[in-house]
Length: 279
Image (tube, rainbow, N blue to C red):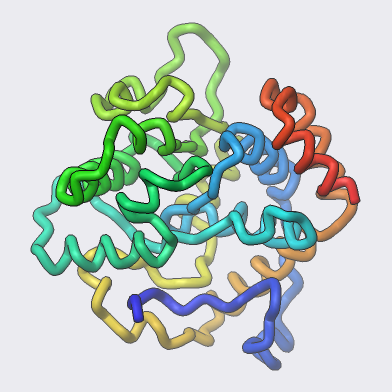
Protein backbone atom coordinates (compact mmCIF):
# COMPACT_ATOMS: atom_id res chain seq x y z
CA UNK A 1 0.00 0.00 0.00
CA UNK A 2 1.29 3.47 -0.91
CA UNK A 3 2.19 5.53 2.15
CA UNK A 4 0.10 8.71 2.26
CA UNK A 5 -1.09 11.14 4.94
CA UNK A 6 -4.39 10.23 6.52
CA UNK A 7 -7.34 12.35 5.43
CA UNK A 8 -10.97 11.99 6.40
CA UNK A 9 -13.52 11.22 3.68
CA UNK A 10 -15.53 14.43 3.79
CA UNK A 11 -18.28 13.27 1.44
CA UNK A 12 -18.94 10.08 3.43
CA UNK A 13 -17.76 11.06 6.93
CA UNK A 14 -18.07 7.77 8.82
CA UNK A 15 -14.81 8.18 10.77
CA UNK A 16 -15.40 11.53 12.43
CA UNK A 17 -17.71 10.57 15.30
CA UNK A 18 -17.74 13.25 18.00
CA UNK A 19 -14.44 14.82 16.93
CA UNK A 20 -16.07 18.10 15.96
CA UNK A 21 -18.26 18.44 19.04
CA UNK A 22 -17.71 21.88 20.57
CA UNK A 23 -15.71 23.04 17.54
CA UNK A 24 -16.66 26.54 16.44
CA UNK A 25 -18.52 26.84 13.14
CA UNK A 26 -16.04 28.31 10.61
CA UNK A 27 -16.65 31.54 8.74
CA UNK A 28 -16.05 30.97 5.03
CA UNK A 29 -15.10 34.58 4.31
CA UNK A 30 -13.30 33.54 1.12
CA UNK A 31 -16.14 31.50 -0.41
CA UNK A 32 -17.11 33.92 -3.18
CA UNK A 33 -13.52 34.24 -4.46
CA UNK A 34 -12.95 30.50 -4.15
CA UNK A 35 -16.15 29.70 -6.05
CA UNK A 36 -15.20 32.04 -8.89
CA UNK A 37 -11.72 30.51 -9.18
CA UNK A 38 -13.11 26.98 -8.96
CA UNK A 39 -15.48 27.66 -11.83
CA UNK A 40 -12.58 28.88 -13.96
CA UNK A 41 -10.52 25.80 -13.11
CA UNK A 42 -13.37 23.60 -14.28
CA UNK A 43 -13.81 25.63 -17.46
CA UNK A 44 -10.10 25.65 -18.29
CA UNK A 45 -9.31 22.01 -17.54
CA UNK A 46 -10.13 20.81 -21.05
CA UNK A 47 -12.50 18.06 -19.88
CA UNK A 48 -9.68 16.49 -17.90
CA UNK A 49 -9.01 14.60 -14.70
CA UNK A 50 -8.11 17.09 -11.95
CA UNK A 51 -5.22 16.31 -9.61
CA UNK A 52 -4.66 18.81 -6.79
CA UNK A 53 -0.96 18.81 -5.91
CA UNK A 54 0.02 19.16 -2.23
CA UNK A 55 -2.28 20.82 0.32
CA UNK A 56 -2.56 24.44 -0.77
CA UNK A 57 -5.83 24.02 -2.67
CA UNK A 58 -7.52 21.54 -0.34
CA UNK A 59 -10.40 24.01 -0.09
CA UNK A 60 -11.03 23.95 -3.84
CA UNK A 61 -10.90 20.16 -3.80
CA UNK A 62 -13.42 20.05 -0.94
CA UNK A 63 -15.79 22.56 -2.54
CA UNK A 64 -15.77 20.44 -5.69
CA UNK A 65 -16.40 17.32 -3.61
CA UNK A 66 -19.76 18.78 -2.64
CA UNK A 67 -20.63 20.52 -5.91
CA UNK A 68 -19.88 17.51 -8.14
CA UNK A 69 -21.22 14.85 -5.78
CA UNK A 70 -24.32 14.11 -7.86
CA UNK A 71 -22.75 14.63 -11.27
CA UNK A 72 -20.85 12.37 -13.63
CA UNK A 73 -17.72 14.26 -12.52
CA UNK A 74 -17.86 12.99 -8.93
CA UNK A 75 -14.82 10.75 -9.45
CA UNK A 76 -12.74 13.14 -11.57
CA UNK A 77 -11.27 15.23 -8.73
CA UNK A 78 -8.23 13.77 -6.96
CA UNK A 79 -5.64 14.74 -4.38
CA UNK A 80 -1.92 14.21 -4.97
CA UNK A 81 -0.62 14.98 -1.48
CA UNK A 82 3.10 15.18 -2.23
CA UNK A 83 5.39 18.12 -1.62
CA UNK A 84 8.09 18.59 -4.26
CA UNK A 85 11.02 20.92 -3.76
CA UNK A 86 13.16 21.87 -6.76
CA UNK A 87 16.78 21.03 -7.37
CA UNK A 88 17.01 18.29 -4.74
CA UNK A 89 18.97 15.10 -5.29
CA UNK A 90 16.62 12.12 -5.31
CA UNK A 91 17.78 8.63 -4.42
CA UNK A 92 16.59 5.66 -6.43
CA UNK A 93 14.16 4.87 -3.62
CA UNK A 94 12.85 8.45 -3.66
CA UNK A 95 12.17 8.16 -7.37
CA UNK A 96 10.41 4.82 -6.89
CA UNK A 97 8.25 6.24 -4.07
CA UNK A 98 7.29 9.29 -6.10
CA UNK A 99 6.29 7.07 -9.00
CA UNK A 100 4.24 4.89 -6.66
CA UNK A 101 2.37 7.96 -5.42
CA UNK A 102 1.68 9.10 -8.97
CA UNK A 103 0.53 5.60 -9.91
CA UNK A 104 -1.87 5.67 -6.94
CA UNK A 105 -3.63 8.49 -8.81
CA UNK A 106 -3.60 6.52 -12.05
CA UNK A 107 -0.71 8.58 -13.42
CA UNK A 108 1.87 6.40 -15.19
CA UNK A 109 3.56 6.80 -18.58
CA UNK A 110 1.52 3.85 -19.87
CA UNK A 111 -1.77 5.40 -18.70
CA UNK A 112 -0.85 8.88 -19.94
CA UNK A 113 -0.11 7.55 -23.41
CA UNK A 114 -3.40 5.67 -23.63
CA UNK A 115 -5.83 7.80 -21.63
CA UNK A 116 -8.78 9.44 -23.32
CA UNK A 117 -8.85 12.55 -21.08
CA UNK A 118 -6.17 15.11 -20.24
CA UNK A 119 -4.36 14.76 -16.92
CA UNK A 120 -4.59 18.17 -15.24
CA UNK A 121 -2.37 19.22 -12.33
CA UNK A 122 -3.71 22.09 -10.22
CA UNK A 123 -1.75 23.98 -7.59
CA UNK A 124 -1.28 27.36 -5.97
CA UNK A 125 1.58 28.87 -7.97
CA UNK A 126 4.03 31.70 -7.46
CA UNK A 127 7.14 30.85 -9.48
CA UNK A 128 6.04 27.37 -10.54
CA UNK A 129 8.73 25.40 -8.68
CA UNK A 130 6.43 22.49 -7.81
CA UNK A 131 5.10 22.22 -11.36
CA UNK A 132 8.65 22.36 -12.69
CA UNK A 133 9.83 19.52 -10.46
CA UNK A 134 6.74 17.44 -11.19
CA UNK A 135 7.13 17.93 -14.93
CA UNK A 136 10.82 17.00 -14.94
CA UNK A 137 10.21 13.87 -12.85
CA UNK A 138 7.37 12.81 -15.14
CA UNK A 139 9.50 13.45 -18.21
CA UNK A 140 12.29 11.23 -16.84
CA UNK A 141 9.79 8.47 -16.12
CA UNK A 142 8.28 8.67 -19.59
CA UNK A 143 11.76 8.42 -21.11
CA UNK A 144 12.64 5.46 -18.85
CA UNK A 145 9.48 3.64 -19.96
CA UNK A 146 10.00 4.63 -23.61
CA UNK A 147 6.43 5.75 -23.98
CA UNK A 148 5.39 8.08 -26.80
CA UNK A 149 6.16 11.62 -25.66
CA UNK A 150 4.59 13.14 -28.80
CA UNK A 151 1.28 11.57 -27.69
CA UNK A 152 1.58 12.30 -23.97
CA UNK A 153 2.51 15.98 -24.41
CA UNK A 154 -0.97 16.62 -25.82
CA UNK A 155 -2.61 15.12 -22.72
CA UNK A 156 -0.77 16.97 -19.93
CA UNK A 157 -2.12 20.22 -18.50
CA UNK A 158 -0.91 22.49 -15.70
CA UNK A 159 -3.40 24.90 -14.12
CA UNK A 160 -1.81 27.44 -11.80
CA UNK A 161 -3.85 29.42 -9.28
CA UNK A 162 -1.92 32.68 -9.07
CA UNK A 163 -1.94 35.99 -7.23
CA UNK A 164 -4.31 38.43 -8.90
CA UNK A 165 -2.52 41.36 -10.51
CA UNK A 166 -3.55 44.28 -12.71
CA UNK A 167 -4.42 43.24 -16.25
CA UNK A 168 -1.81 44.69 -18.59
CA UNK A 169 0.17 43.43 -21.60
CA UNK A 170 3.49 43.34 -19.74
CA UNK A 171 2.18 41.50 -16.65
CA UNK A 172 4.61 38.86 -15.37
CA UNK A 173 3.53 35.25 -15.83
CA UNK A 174 5.39 32.42 -14.11
CA UNK A 175 5.31 30.12 -17.15
CA UNK A 176 7.34 32.61 -19.18
CA UNK A 177 10.34 32.13 -16.86
CA UNK A 178 10.61 28.34 -17.15
CA UNK A 179 11.80 26.49 -20.24
CA UNK A 180 9.77 23.29 -19.98
CA UNK A 181 6.42 24.94 -20.71
CA UNK A 182 7.60 25.47 -24.30
CA UNK A 183 7.63 21.70 -24.77
CA UNK A 184 3.84 21.59 -24.39
CA UNK A 185 1.02 23.00 -26.53
CA UNK A 186 0.14 26.60 -25.70
CA UNK A 187 -3.20 25.65 -24.13
CA UNK A 188 -1.55 23.14 -21.78
CA UNK A 189 -0.42 25.76 -19.26
CA UNK A 190 -3.16 28.06 -17.97
CA UNK A 191 -3.74 30.27 -14.95
CA UNK A 192 -6.61 31.31 -12.73
CA UNK A 193 -6.14 34.22 -10.34
CA UNK A 194 -7.16 34.66 -6.70
CA UNK A 195 -7.41 37.80 -4.60
CA UNK A 196 -4.23 38.45 -2.61
CA UNK A 197 -5.71 37.83 0.85
CA UNK A 198 -7.31 34.53 -0.23
CA UNK A 199 -4.17 33.35 -2.01
CA UNK A 200 -1.99 33.97 1.04
CA UNK A 201 -4.57 32.40 3.34
CA UNK A 202 -4.50 29.15 1.39
CA UNK A 203 -0.74 29.25 0.89
CA UNK A 204 0.49 30.40 4.30
CA UNK A 205 -2.12 30.84 7.02
CA UNK A 206 -4.87 28.25 6.66
CA UNK A 207 -4.85 25.34 9.14
CA UNK A 208 -4.39 22.16 7.11
CA UNK A 209 -6.11 18.85 7.58
CA UNK A 210 -3.01 16.79 6.78
CA UNK A 211 0.70 17.19 7.53
CA UNK A 212 3.05 18.37 4.83
CA UNK A 213 4.44 15.42 2.87
CA UNK A 214 7.93 16.26 1.59
CA UNK A 215 10.43 13.71 0.33
CA UNK A 216 11.83 13.18 3.84
CA UNK A 217 8.44 11.82 5.00
CA UNK A 218 7.41 9.73 2.02
CA UNK A 219 8.29 6.55 3.93
CA UNK A 220 7.20 7.82 7.36
CA UNK A 221 4.17 5.72 8.32
CA UNK A 222 3.27 8.05 11.20
CA UNK A 223 1.57 10.33 8.65
CA UNK A 224 -1.12 7.66 8.35
CA UNK A 225 -2.25 8.26 11.94
CA UNK A 226 -5.00 10.90 12.23
CA UNK A 227 -4.24 13.96 14.33
CA UNK A 228 -6.93 15.18 16.75
CA UNK A 229 -5.34 18.46 17.79
CA UNK A 230 -7.13 21.78 17.86
CA UNK A 231 -5.72 23.04 14.56
CA UNK A 232 -6.72 19.83 12.80
CA UNK A 233 -10.24 20.02 14.22
CA UNK A 234 -10.58 23.59 12.95
CA UNK A 235 -9.33 22.50 9.54
CA UNK A 236 -11.76 19.59 9.53
CA UNK A 237 -14.68 21.84 10.44
CA UNK A 238 -13.77 24.23 7.62
CA UNK A 239 -13.40 21.36 5.15
CA UNK A 240 -16.83 19.95 6.04
CA UNK A 241 -18.34 23.42 5.72
CA UNK A 242 -16.85 23.72 2.22
CA UNK A 243 -18.30 20.38 1.14
CA UNK A 244 -21.71 21.51 2.41
CA UNK A 245 -21.30 24.85 0.63
CA UNK A 246 -20.52 23.02 -2.59
CA UNK A 247 -23.72 21.02 -2.25
CA UNK A 248 -25.83 24.17 -1.87
CA UNK A 249 -27.94 25.44 -4.75
CA UNK A 250 -26.50 28.93 -4.23
CA UNK A 251 -22.90 27.83 -4.77
CA UNK A 252 -23.73 25.61 -7.72
CA UNK A 253 -25.61 28.53 -9.29
CA UNK A 254 -22.54 30.75 -8.82
CA UNK A 255 -20.39 28.07 -10.42
CA UNK A 256 -22.75 27.86 -13.39
CA UNK A 257 -22.79 31.62 -13.91
CA UNK A 258 -19.00 31.89 -13.75
CA UNK A 259 -18.46 28.87 -15.99
CA UNK A 260 -20.95 30.23 -18.54
CA UNK A 261 -18.88 33.40 -18.90
CA UNK A 262 -15.82 31.38 -19.99
CA UNK A 263 -14.99 30.87 -23.71
CA UNK A 264 -14.84 27.10 -23.14
CA UNK A 265 -18.63 27.06 -22.66
CA UNK A 266 -18.78 26.55 -26.43
CA UNK A 267 -17.59 22.98 -25.80
CA UNK A 268 -20.28 20.28 -25.49
CA UNK A 269 -18.49 18.70 -22.50
CA UNK A 270 -18.70 21.93 -20.46
CA UNK A 271 -22.31 22.62 -21.40
CA UNK A 272 -23.15 19.08 -20.25
CA UNK A 273 -21.45 19.73 -16.89
CA UNK A 274 -23.37 22.98 -16.46
CA UNK A 275 -26.61 21.09 -17.09
CA UNK A 276 -25.70 18.60 -14.38
CA UNK A 277 -24.79 21.35 -11.91
CA UNK A 278 -28.20 22.96 -12.45
CA UNK A 279 -30.05 19.79 -11.45
